[in-house]
Length: 445
Image (tube, rainbow, N blue to C red; front, side, top):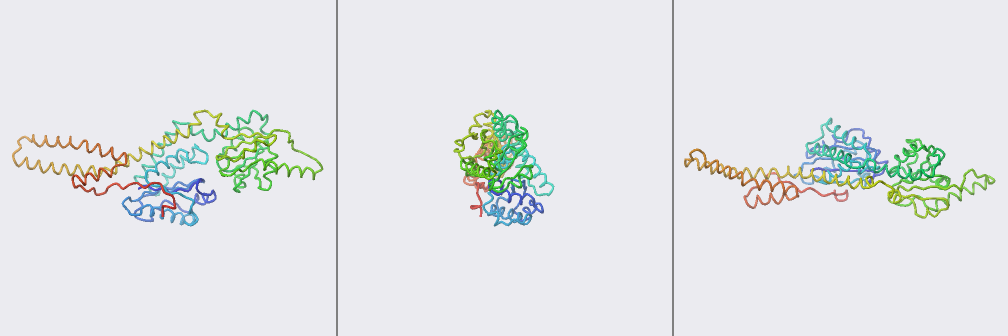
């Protein structure tokens, strides 16, 4: 049984993810060594994601709980982060949900910037590392190899690689018509989350040089140091907003981070400073300013559009200008991922039904061999009766064997196994267990 313990930018703080991404020792071997029911482990650890994929011995009672326990113990041992600190910051997936999740991750659908290609290489390297550490299993090998295949299919069949960044690019292209010289523009970036790094790169491609960054979550200093920007404090944020030619918001905040009141506060502070400086005004407030809101949900209160001299451009407007191929890329990619996950589960179900098919055939051929022995004892010359019987049995077994695989692919393997028991008294030694549904930490304990 496959299990995934996942902490990502959607569930955990970036500070916590940063601590998880640099373990003192490899985590996968610690998971694999925790209990004999752990068949293997592969860990994907990046700056925005920490995920442990664990293969558990399926018949073991409470395998999910044991897998979570093994993962949390290994994390604490390798990173010093205790389970109590992780509580509420991760989710647990099991069964068929694991494949769909990993395929989505590898395809960039779960990334901070949707469609980014770096994660595919990180997923492949995670498998290679586990191979070197000796912690993979046959099922984990199959899972990660199919993930790479799914990622290539998504990349080759959709425009997902351009979907996320295209929103940034399109927004700047719409702004370009009113900006004569990007190098003279005072640009303020609000947020260090979704699209922030891509936005900085796109701004510099346009020629922007004066770029500041403000983070409502307090990450501006770290982000600015990494990208060579100027960090803005909460105290000076309104004033910088009022002075900027272009403000771009791209935070994951569920609340508005910019409103008409922000501009009012900034201009009020500016006017007070001008009065103190004997009326010297170095900033031209007659020029029009632009706010681009890349947040989802919206980062900017719609009332900003009512501020004199300020134009507001949001995702809804940007998407109206997006090429249809790029607009539909994410939906198409998720359809491909779901299909790939179904195929992965189908193969797994076929493997699970194999013991039942083998048991049926063994039972029938056992009866056949006994009948053939009886016919031989009665003098079957030339073996014609035996040949006819074996042909008949092969024909009779064809449909039950085909139906076994068909039922397995639709999740009805248990019905087939129950029928064998009811009709023939055949008890399958290792019947397929029902795959657990997705669960979160509240249910997993």
